[in-house]
Amino acid sequence: MLKRTLLSLLFPLALGKPVEGDQSQKRYAIMDNDWGNAGFVPFLLALDGGMEVLALVSDTANSWQPQTAMHALSSLEAGNLSCIPVYAGATWPLINTPHRFQAWESIHGKLPWEGAFAPENQTAEAQGNDPTSGDPNRIVKAALKEGVPKTTVNNSTSAANFMVETVHKYPGQVSIYSAGALTNVALAVRMDPNFASLAKELVIMGGYVDGNMMRATGNYLVADINSDINLMIDPEAAKIALNADFPSIIIAGNVANQVMATKEYLDEVYQVKNRYTELFHKYQSLDFPFWDETAAALMVDPSISRNHSTVYIDVDVAYGSPSYGNIQVYQKSLAPVGLRNVTYVNEIDGAKLKDMMKHAMQHPKSCSDIK
Image (tube, rainbow, N blue to C red; front, side, top):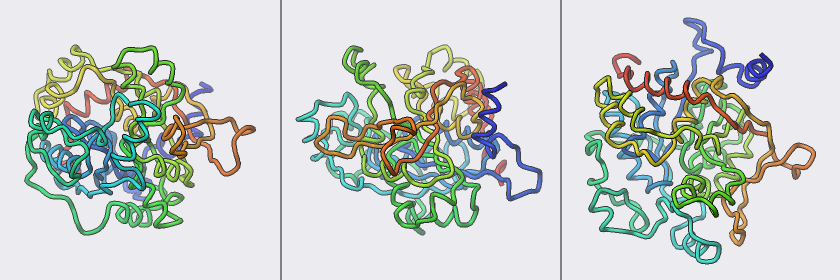
């Protein structure tokens, strides 16, 4: 009872259901991600949870932004959801580049997963891998296993500007979801001093704590899933975003590794046949946890959190540091001046997460439903 009471205090708007006809209580989301082949589950979760997804935004993390935008468009087309616009985010991080990142690695050690900053590999791209390094604007059609999209990104404004305009239109109602690099969020923070405070919350996937020993003693896969590429692609943006004055910041860091994909679960989801369950069954890797899905589920229904901590947070932006791009957390009495508190989720209800995901995929909303 105490835990649920604390959650109710922490997430009052998220736990409350809107009164029918009361638009002031409607919940909106802008979902920023490095979208991939099976990356549609987060927006399906949001729609299934009664949120209105105002837009998808692409960013550079696992691959370059133009490629992840194509995945976003394809994923929406797969379920007749192209009424949701896709805005192209920033292609380049604020400072970081592949050359700069690889130079850092030569001193401090390689990351098992380097995302968009891995050396260019044309052989891998020909076999269906997303592009890395090289020309960031090239599109690798072989990697678009959902199909090459027929629709295009919305070029009416920048992704960051769309975020700013939207929170002014719906103050206190827009959740900003970020499961890739935080570049676009940081740009919006810097563009408008009121942006963060006018949003409802920032919910991110990333920000691992104390994973060094696991990376050193585990096998390559364990090292991989404990590496924080989302923050390390653009550490400076992460520092800006995670110290902005959002009313609430919720972090799915280590907890995003809690629930792993299994063949049994993929088969269970595929008992209902549609385009999303087909893609999920075919392309969801059994090697990885449900990272982005965990963060999206926390945005939709924060009561899936079973344990959380309130901590003060900073991001190491010293290029010469072996912890460059990683977070440091503090209790209030020991925190440096100028940091803010965040909600760091430590444990979730894994069974509930999988139930939410399954329902969202087996009963996906389409444009005819959400209009």
